[in-house]
Structures are given as structure tokens and as C-alpha cells.
Amino acid sequence: MPRPISVRIHPEAVRHNLQTAQQSASGARVWAVVKANAYGHGIERIYPALAGADGIALLDLDEAVRVRQLGWTKPILLLEGVFDSTDVATAVAHRLTVSVHDDEQLALLAAARTQQPIDINLKMNSGMNRLGYRPDVFRAAWERARATPTIGTIGLMTHFANADDGAIDWQLDRFDAATQGIPGERSLSNSAAVLWHPNAHRDWVRPGTILYGASPTGAARHIEGIGLRAAMTLASRIIGVQTLAPQETVGYGRTYEAERPMRIGVVACGYADGYPRHAPTGTPIVVDGIRTRVVGRVSMDMLTVDLTPCPDAGIGSKVELWGENVKVDEVAEAAGTIGYELMCAVARRVPVDIDTLKAAQHEAAESATV
Ligand SMILES: *Cc1c(COP(=O)(O)O)cnc(C)c1O
Figure 1 (cartoon, rainbow, N blue to C red):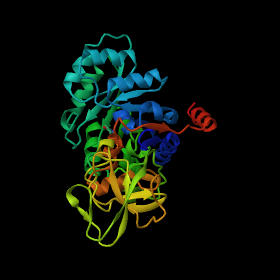
Figure 2 (figure 1 turned 180 degrees about the vertical axis):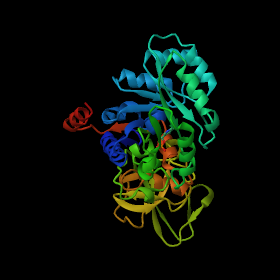
Figure 3 (figure 1 turned 45 degrees about the vertical axis):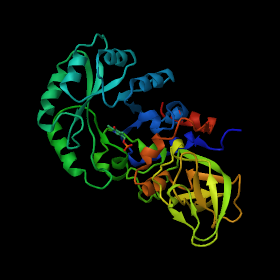
Figure 4 (figure 1 turned 120 degrees about the vertical axis):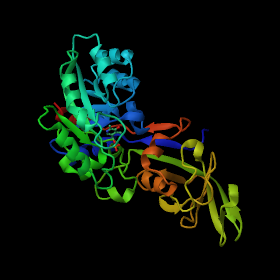
């Protein structure tokens, strides 16, 4: 029998969250962001739930090709564009829309051998200072792109540095000033801006993390009441129980000491499964449907939980590490990171189950996009 751990993927939740994003940014078209193998969920596993999106955005070419092979005929946006001429050929062959953030990329596209011009999103560095043309040279870059015969339609994009904690206007103002009078569809908003900055919605939005039910800020409380659903449940079972006397400790480093007699459950999940080793005593976890806490240090293949609130729990009891009842962001916050990182880091050794997407609703979602 395999270890009792598994990760369950819920495409239905992704479809629901996509609809929530669409309602939040009504009027804008949606690039569903599926980079990093759909934030760890598996592109193929959640693909049927994306039927209602207007485009799919990602950055690895092999992922783009996989999406085309799945039958996607709508646009695909390469968020970091092309890196060499082979990439250009792949972009041409699969009709990819490519981001362009510098002159090297413009030159690669200018040298493309293609009858069919390549659509691009010209990227402005409006203050994030990762990729893109600075505002003062953006217009000139656009002129060069427009004069390039192998380039087709030109969208205008930028990315926010802190849409999650409120301040975007400084970037928005730079973007608007530097693009004034330039035609083309605008794409600015990540998940945080989709939820909280309607003035940035414009023509296309680019939600990622909210499609998977996680919080753009990394704090579960910030998305309470929005109705997003967890797209991933990491679950396992209790494989051992210990009864501790007062002053006895549990696990490596003896970081947790019992104050009174207590039962400890040993869960088949550790950092080699992708559970964060930094999750301290007190990190929330659910046993037999009851919230309790991790105690002691997370080890490679196991972690230990306080069974005080769940006296009926024992070997075989179900454990939810994260999912609908304990949010991935709650675990992440306790461990000093964000849900994004945990979702992306579930280990290969964890077996995956996939919920089936209800067929009737699937058809409804598809016909709604026609
Ligand atoms: C990852 C990414 C997004 C999506 O960000 P979320 O915070 O997950 O919504 C949008 N745009 C670009 C350019 C990205 O790299």
C-alpha cells in the first residue's frame, strides 16, 4: 500500500474562480495565467476548466506547445517572450502572442521567417524594474515595433509591483502618460488588481493565483467573502499516535514540550512532500474535520499534530494539510511564505487525484464563450 498522502485537484474550483475573476473585471478579457505548470496544479488537469477564458498566459515554450496540443485555439501569451531564434520559430508555428521587453527580442522577431505577422505585447517597465522598456523610451520602441513587417498587432502591457497592498496609481499614471495616444489593447492587472483596482482592468486582465483559490497578498483573510475555492487539497492520514507525559518532547530538535498529558498524531507528510519545514508549532491543520495545530518540527516524511481537540482521532484518521478547510495561505503565512510557493512546490512523489468536471457545466462554459 502506498503512503496515504495525496494531492487532489479540483478543476471545478478553477472554473468557478475564473468566473469570479471575470465578474470582478467585467468588460475585460481574461488571460488565464497557467505558468509554472498552472501554479503546480498541472496544466492538463485544469485545462478543461479554462474553456471560458479568452487566452492562456504562461512563459515556458513547452507549456505553450502542450496547451496547443490540448486543442486550445484562442490566443496564448508568452509572458517573457522569446530568447532565441528557435523560440521565434516555435512561436510562429504555434501562433503564440509574445511579450517584448527589449530590443534584443525586437531584433529576433524582425528576423523571423514568417508570412503571418507575430502578435506582440510590448512591455513597459513602469516601476517594477524587472522587465520592460522604461516609460521615456516606450513610444520609440512602439514605433520600431510598428515598422517591423514581421510584427502584427501590438498590445501594451505592464506589471504592478504592489497591487496587493494598495498602491498602484504611481505605476498606472506612468503607464497612461507614456502610452497616451498609442493605439492598442492594454493589459495591466494581475490577481490583486483584478480584485481591488478596477481602474486598471482595461482590455485584458491577467489573473493567476486567484484562479487556484489563493490570495494575492498571501493572507487568506484578505480574500474572505470573495467566494474563491481551493483548487488543490493536500491530504494524508495519521499513521501513528503517541501519548506524551508532561515535559516530554516531540520530534527533531525537541522544539515542542508537552505541558500536560497529551495525544500526538503522526501524519504521513513532510517537507519532502512539499510541506514547508518552517511551519512552526501552531500552524493550522485539520484532523477528522477538526482544526488543530502542528506541533514540533516538520521532518522529511512526517509531521506531528496535537490531537487534544480531536479525542476520537487515531491511526487512519484523515488529515487535511491544506484545501478548503485550512487555506494554503494560512499554512504559508505561518511558515513565512505565500500560498503561491507552496502550491508550486508539491513534490513529484505525491500521488495526484483529479476531480471530474461535470460534463453539462463544461458544455455550458464552452458555449458561453462562442
Ligand atoms: C505571474 C504573472 C501574472 C499573474 O500574477 P498573479 O499574482 O498570480 O495573479 C500576471 N502577469 C505577469 C506578467 C505575471 O508574470
